[in-house]
Image: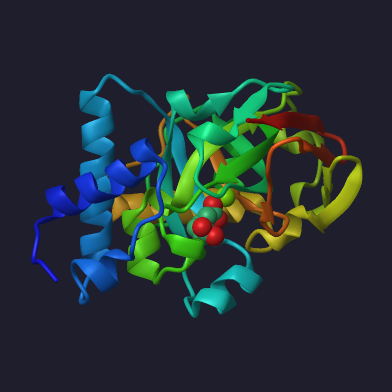
Length: 262
Ligand code: 0L1
Ligand code: MG
């Protein structure tokens, strides 16, 4: 075991992403006592590196927002990470397995933010007022760790497993539908693998965006006008592979799909 700084841990994790290879957990290989606060500093180093390379942030994202996932990880607070422009795949487009390690897909509702949202004390109601549109989305997560096996600080440091995202093309005002009641099916090659409703995300997906604004305020940051934010998984995450046609159908919000190629 070698003791290394946050920047070096970030480089270790970026190498896993770039070289598409599974890594040993940071808490097993590099820093056993990594705290949640330190893990966000590692994540920040990853973000800084990508920004310095000319990549652009589409928006932060929320993860571990369902009771099931929080229970599984033995935590009571969701986490956040960042989605970059190079991670975006067009609706109906292709996800290349050669760009991935062991991808999984989950269905989410994304919020297109119309006005800055500055915590603390933000409520879901304020989020809905400041949201321009909601859109359906599929997130591809690809933990850099062996078998998606990690502790909470590990997954935070690894930018919340973020890998790719596909946004749908239908834009709805958040007042046009009850987001907690939006039913979702996630199909692979036409077969339903997972299903759920918006309420799986902290009771209402806007609650996740409010929580994000409040979490970001602890480090003097905010949810920004123009951010497109994944609010968290409505369905469980499903392993995908070459030849899969993945379709998310969202009641009142439309469909999103992509195909997995070699
Ligand atoms: O977006 C997410 O909810 C992913 C959070 C990280 C947990 C995982 O990789 O399963
Ligand atoms: Mg997600």
